[in-house]
Image (cartoon, rainbow, N blue to C red; front, side, top):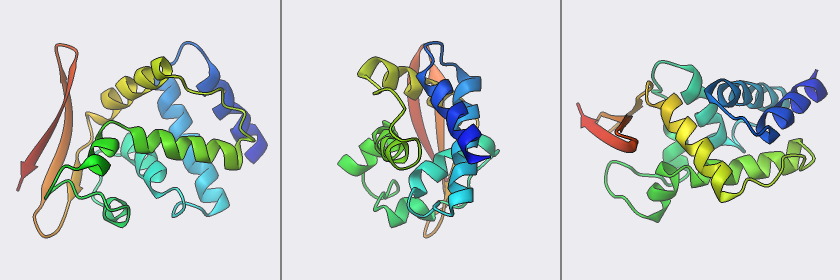
Length: 154
């Protein structure tokens, strides 16, 4: 089962016509591999993205705190790397090396930008609900081609 899933992930990511359907497909298959290999902790941020793409809201955001990402109190380099999806691409690269025999073609800046834009579109429907001490909804929206992150304190 796993070799078939791995081939599907590789083929989808390596394709030149990436779209929302392929990215969601890839995230669902990555999630299956992580669950099968019992490694969601090692790839907790990648796992968070997989869940984020598939649910109507994410309330289990402890992975962010475990990774030292603190959106509610400060925006430092680590938070910027999360918001720009840089940390996602780093974990995707490591996942590729560990599970896909490094079969994914290197994601150049152009392809990363395309995937990041698609991720923003996918994730824009799903708030991250960060608790405690304050409850914060983190939302992505796109207006006139510009991606915006919004924080609503509840």
